[in-house]
Length: 312
Ligand code: NAD
Ligand code: SER
Image (cartoon, rainbow, N blue to C red):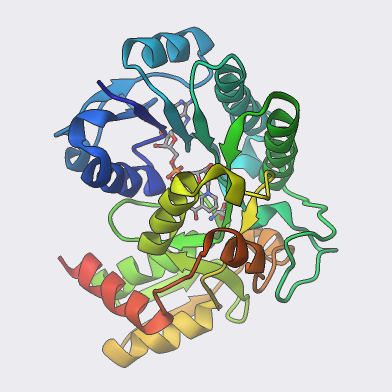
C-alpha cells in the first residue's frame, strides 16, 4: 500500500524527490501525482495519479484509497509566472495548502512537507546572511503567498498539532527536469544554452547575487527534515536553507573555463525587479542546529554536473 503522496510530482523538484523517496521507501510506497495527464518516463515505473490539488474531494479519495500517511505538497505557481496571474497564483498556492492541512487536522494523514522560498523576504530584509527571524515584507504575489503559507503552517501546528515541516528553498539548480517559471531559472537555462548554443541572453544583470542550491542537496534536506524526530523541528513556519550564493557573472566565468567561446549578454527584464528584493545570501544556523543540516555541493561541482547533464 502506498503511504507517501507527492503532489506536483512532474515538476523540477517533484521528479527528483519521487525518485529518491522510492529508492528509500520502495517503489510501491510512493504515489506520484500531478495535474498533468501523464507522468515523465523517469516516474513511470511506479504508481501515478492525475488530479488537481484544488479538488478536495479527489484528494480525500486518493488518500483513503492508497492509505496515504505523508504528503509532500509541491504544486504551486512560481514567482515569475505568478506575477502574470496573481489571483490564480494566490488561489493555487493557498487553497492547495489548506486542502492538505485540513486533512492533517482531521488526522487523515500524519505528516506534511510544504516548501516555502527565499521569496518570503523583501527589500527591507537584511540582504546579506539574512537571518531566520527578521523583517519580511515580500513584494511579489508568490512571496506573499509563501509568507502567508508559513504563518498558516505554524498556526496549524500550534492550534491542531499538525506535523507540518517546511524549508525556504533557495533557487534550485538541476538538469533532469525544466524549472517551472521562477526568477532563479536562469541558473539552469544558462547551462542548457552554453552546451547547445554557446550563447546566453540573461534576464538578470551580471552582478545580481542570489542564494542557490544544487538539487541533490535540496532533496536530501527535504527528506532529512521529514525524517528528523518531531521534537527537533523547532521552527514550524519554515527553515532558512543555504547552499551557495552566486550571480550570473560567477556562472559565466565558471562555464567559460570549459567553453572558451561561450558568450553572455545581459538584458534584464521584469524578473530583475523581483530578484532585487531577494537576499544575496542566507543564514541557516537554525536548520544546522536543530536537525544537523549541512550543504554539500559547491559551485565547481555544480558546473561540472550541469554541463555533463545537458551534454547527454
Ligand atoms: P514546478 O513548477 O517545476 O512544478 C510544480 C508542479 O505542480 C508541476 O508539475 C505542475 O504541473 C504541478 N501543478 C500545478 N498546478 C497543479 C494543481 N492544481 N494540482 C496538481 N499539480 C499541479 O515547481 P518546482 O520548482 O518543482 O517547485 C515545487 C515547490 O517548491 C513549489 O511550491 C515552489 O514554490 C517551491 N520552490 C521551488 C524552488 C525552485 O527553485 N524550484 C525554490 C523555492 C521554492
Ligand atoms: N526559484 C524560485 C523562484 O524563482 C524561488 O522560490 O520562483
